[in-house]
Length: 245
Image 1 (tube, rainbow, N blue to C red):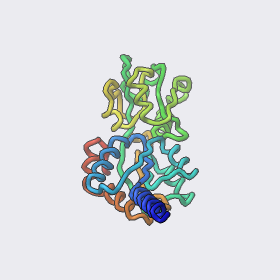
Image 2: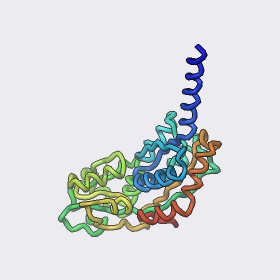
Image 3: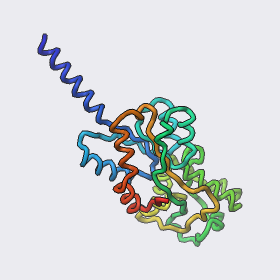
Image 4: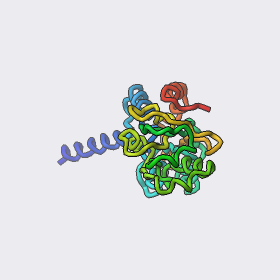
């Protein structure tokens, strides 16, 4: 009986240890490659830390966190969803910091001439992230509205669940083109960058990051977010085409 009890205690301790070293990351889909590289590099130096990564649209991730999904670190692709969770008292305000910046572009495999946002009405299908949950879609919709073309495009949109789905549609030729971030365009194998959206047409793309309230006192979570603010993270960000200021 004592032996069984001892084994149970050991198993509980081992389980607790594993959980203690586990960090749950909820990160904007456009950061997938860089976060995979940074987390792998961090684990190589800190083998006791294990990452559970959840990539998706910022609004979807924020909703999951609000509904109780496990999350220690949240990185969004705009300030709106970070502010949303901050107002809900779900992220620790003192840890909110800018991770990186990006820019919006239009990519595709179409043979049609597309050199600016004014050429979009000549296309048949355009992939865009759902503006209600995908920041890239919201940025794109703002740009099209300001440029005066959005009223000519309402029947041409193919709504995607996140920016990576937009890129996939463009890569497969299922749409004439898609709005994605510049860093996504660098990942493309078939789709070409057709034009860069003028910055004056939309708010600057910013990636705020923060620890959740539950993780604010977690030493491992604090160590990782400090790592993301450091020189190695900045070097990798630059390699993947992100802007640091």
